[in-house]
Image (cartoon, rainbow, N blue to C red; front, side, top):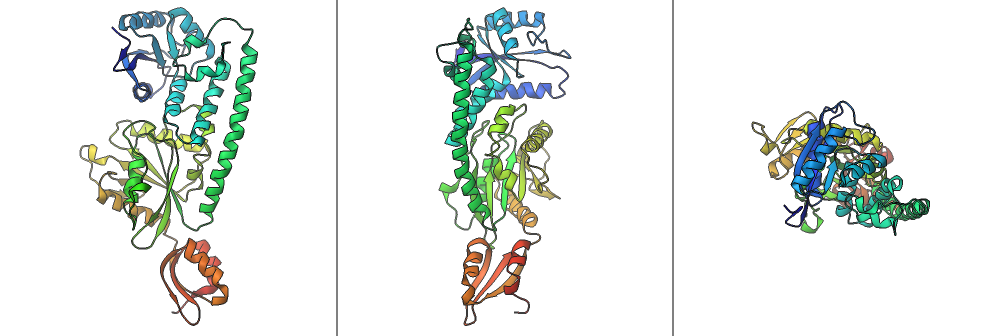
Length: 426
């Protein structure tokens, strides 16, 4: 039997339960990550024990079993459900003559394949090099290891070049971090320009493949002036996009808000990757409202919700108003949709009626403290007219002998700022 099918490498996924209550779920997800990396699952091996072996992760009997199954399946790569120490990987490879890839390395490869913008590419490369730093062995070029699938071929004998190799990688990490700071500065300037407007920001967050991009495109359909080129990339696969997209939503009632789509989460997301993507997740940190998109048709949706909230806490996104958006309700038997229950909405991102309900809920949460007022601004203070027209929600405008008359929906901050222009009895 060949170890490739339709150009895809066949691999075995394996893991140790070690008291993980969600072990079966994470193993299932590991298979999905393998497929996202253009590989195929040939077999699944589990060991139900309370703790992992410090030497080989698996017990010795299971290591022998893995070797036998791999030989029978003609598979040379084993993908593991946890992040292993460098010595555990080396010991496994020495005992089995197979290549081993842990969950962290797999996730980093998937992210690397999905990174398109300069920012995302820099973030992923930094995380990969930080992961590889304690794992390198002398080779012709240690940076070549970034393209290694399991690492066995690049873990050669000899220690004379080890410190030199590490120095090369550390230098590369420093250079990439400097480059990332430059890119981040540009993005922060763009972000500040957005925050200079009074438009509220809504940020879509959630597990990978929950339907955030589809939801965003559905909301974009409610723009007064719909434009296909403003839509974001969507595809039914893990980590279809790693890039943050921000769009302005202008509704028929003249209310407007900014909407951002963010990178999706997954269980056991590598810490280095979370650190690297903190800037990308800044949109969520700056948001006035979070919409957590949850695939309610997935039996593990509660796990996904917990992982999302845990990851948001790790990057400092806390205390934000949140709508829980239970997507794919059309795929869950017996689930009525679209329905709103408090801060929860059950919907389908492909259903226009569902998206309309979501728009109504977003408006209710965003604009509850806004107030519709009339303003009269004298012509000698037209800078305020320009400011309001540019940044606020304008219902109507008229120019009279006394000055500019605006009807606008203002936030509490704007009401205080423009109080002297507000007409009490118009």
